[in-house]
Length: 239
Ligand code: GLP
Image (cartoon, rainbow, N blue to C red):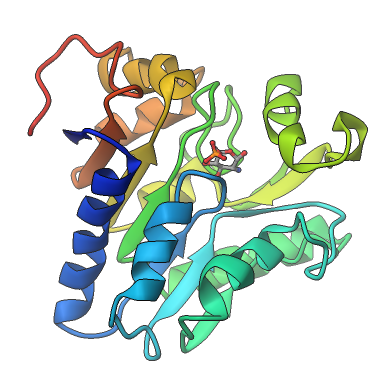
């Protein structure tokens, strides 16, 4: 795991953009994408760049169960608003939260991932160390499936809804095993509220209680932080 610390979100997001330039330098790729506040600046940088994704594929990590793609809080809506409407891809694969058939939705998505292995997976991190929607206790071999959200995740995500009771209580999410199949992983974390999760991910024991600690076992992980998210780290960063 390589850890790089930048002064602020702007410079960190510009550094993250370089990984997309490098990835596309030798042709189209399969990109794993994430939602949340964390990648918003990176998506702005990508939109402002001349990078061409028209022959690339994307897979999104997760989606709330029960939300139609047209719902303003759905991750499908988020991705179109922040990236896809401006930067067209050859195809965007997104989980359909409105499909009540968990088995059909998740196994189909997992089959697509096997068919198109991800070259570069982007991740954020939850305050409790979750990646995608893999809450603490998720198996490191887990595949795409339905996950019941914890109170802390519902509370953290309620800022984007009118009230906490509007936040869906479950999501479809790529599993930790699905994420670890990616060839390269780029995790971004910004802000002091992520500092404890970042410390546990980077310096803590590898444990299912901290889903992101699974990344310590992957050979190609880059972690990009701002100063606040790095504030509890005791080890030396790579830059
Ligand atoms: C959400 C998403 C994650 C995201 C995380 C952090 O629950 N499922 O993919 O990384 O929480 O979100 P944010 O970037 O808004 O802090």
